[in-house]
Image (cartoon, rainbow, N blue to C red; front, side, top):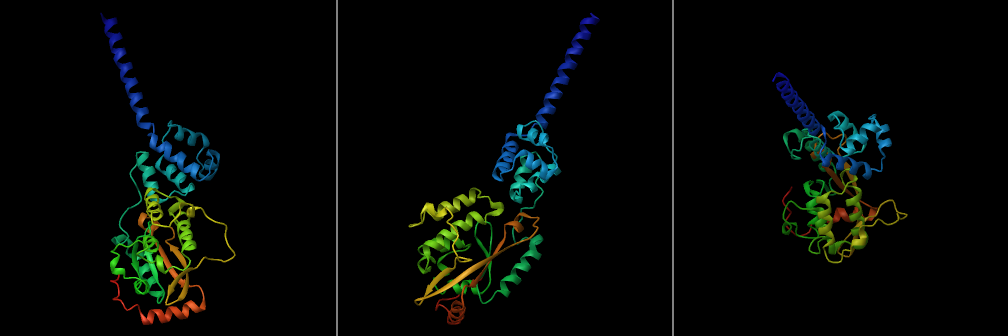
Length: 302
């Protein structure tokens, strides 16, 4: 009798240990999403497991175990891998969630209280760029702030009031009811802008919302899908954007500024675009244009 009771107890203990091991393995086994995300970013950056190991100090064996679902990295090691792969902050939060960790990068609004020092610096930059247009945009080219010159400039060509806020700079350029009829070198300008969407995307990654933006731009009449393919660089250092006003072409180029060492998603995704005259004639005509105005009511400041 005692022998059979002992056997039953041993069976129960063995079953309990098996269930505990199974539960522990289930907890340690990373979801498919983590494995797929890590492999996706490594492939996107063109890095082998050995390359990534040398960049991070994480053993190649451990990286292989992570990608095969046999191991979960610590949060610190996962962030070391994300840094080595230059993964944007928003996508790093996704990687953390896939590994079972809480996100660490704040996703507050660009004008949230913790962004006031950055917002103040942006306003200072906008003011100092007068009398030329300057805009602050988010990751998807939505205009968040401008200096006084920007709406005055665009109102010299169109009635901005017809285009409700928040305005998207790319839609404003591609829309036949927007700035497009006033762009002198439209084909070249459109190709250049589409190339910039790819080149200047955060982390050099075209995410789903950027793909949707590109699809919307390509849906405008006369916009060709092949314009997304970059062309060989010309002899000029920049491709100027020409605007036609009173039979005069005003040529501008842009300088784009981003926030260095960002620690919030909003800070990383902000961009300042400052327009400069590409030649002396444009600078003279710009002064006359801004003094004369467009004859329209000034747009409401952002």
